[in-house]
Image (cartoon, rainbow, N blue to C red; front, top):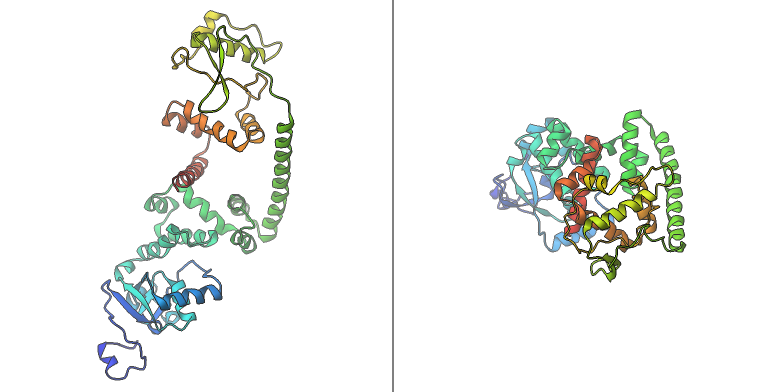
Length: 398
């Protein structure tokens, strides 16, 4: 490898562009492109169109705001000695910033600002973390690139859990991404172009992994899945239209407590029942309504005494508004799934939001919510749910 120092500028170095500094001490250097090479372990393959790279290169000619992390050639080759011929006779190897390198090359820029830190090449694990983490955190990867990036981390860290713990993620965050590496190239192209949503891609990735499906089988599954999704969407739309055209729901079966008045609820904008009777009396009426909805053969209603013994104490003070308007006795109370399906199909977006938020208002705290959501889910499914809830939390804070 050719040696370069400050005297080259005085004795006719063949490259008119001088190297400001060549010590790998973490300082900002202006490095000629011919003395710089991208690393060969970057999972990123989509750097944009030629036009986009030219636009980036022109921007870099005006001003390069962010320097590219790099390591010395010797430090890099200690990790991957078999890359010597492919990176060529250069002084430095980029850790990240290959898109900037390509943009600068596209417009003939002579140099690129770099910060050289051989500490990033302490070992393969450290180097790969540096290569991947910036792009993952800034969401620069497309889903397939991210999948292979995470897979490369698993190879260096030894397990999905080790990667998840290192990046302070749940195990499912790693598993969901690695599943995409089991897709055939033609299926991966559908993900890249957003022709296949990620939830379907992950389901297909799991099926392909577990059943060793090839490309044709994967595409056949996706064709069938699209038909099923279209049918389900049509059924939901039809149910929604039917719900809007249906008659007003029947009122709650049972006798209205004496002294009850109809008042407007300030929070929900609906009518609520306000009464001076005790919560137990009103709750007993509601219980009778539910029992009556069971129809004949359900047996006689419980006596007042037995009902009182089995009743969960109502924490609300006497006289507090209890929302019951719009509730019917013939709803799908037998199934939480059916009840939620009915709510999604029949409620408007604003009312659906109230329906979901109301769950948190009436729950007894975070532990109760966790227990409800845990349900009978497997460990893997709980991890997947945790990822979704984390994404929801991030979205709410934006």
